[in-house]
Image (cartoon, rainbow, N blue to C red):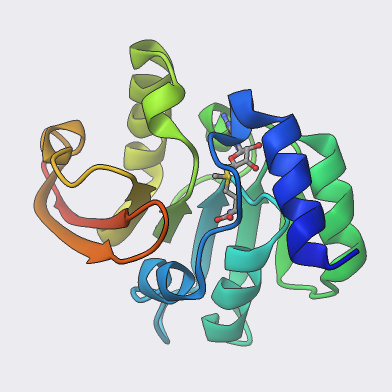
Length: 182
Ligand SMILES: C[S@@+](CC[C@H](N)C(=O)[O-])C[C@H]1O[C@@H](n2cnc3c(N)ncnc32)[C@H](O)[C@@H]1O
């Protein structure tokens, strides 16, 4: 069976945690990793799934960079363990809310494709509070959402929020947030 179809079946089976029926499109992968640049030494991914964005991040990460990829589904973690062999990658089978247990500070980029709109307000606020404190002042928090009017989710944490729309099914919007509000 083609791997894309396998992934779609797994996503549908676990719709309550994936919030999606298929993998993010190539254009969205490109857009959400746009801020991973030469000086991005420490990158964190939230919601690794079957590792499509993970691979894109690794293709842009410097040779001495590190990537911590969080994923709550242990089967998804196994798929990526078997398909990506890269010493720069650490797969964390835990919730993004527990980021502080694994990463201490100075994160350049946080890249999230988690279905935030399905999370409780408390969980979103816990994830944002924890990540915000570990992100560098000039770091980027990039998030995929299906809605272009969600700046209010981020504006108490960041003063610059750029939104890029991607034509796909369903349409996706990538929020790039930076310039931490102190
Ligand atoms: C829409 S899928 C995205 C998968 C893949 N990155 C992509 O872009 O196609 C969202 C992923 O977030 C994971 N997830 C859900 N809640 C999470 C949490 N609290 N912490 C980490 N990952 C979570 C789900 O298991 C799922 O793999």
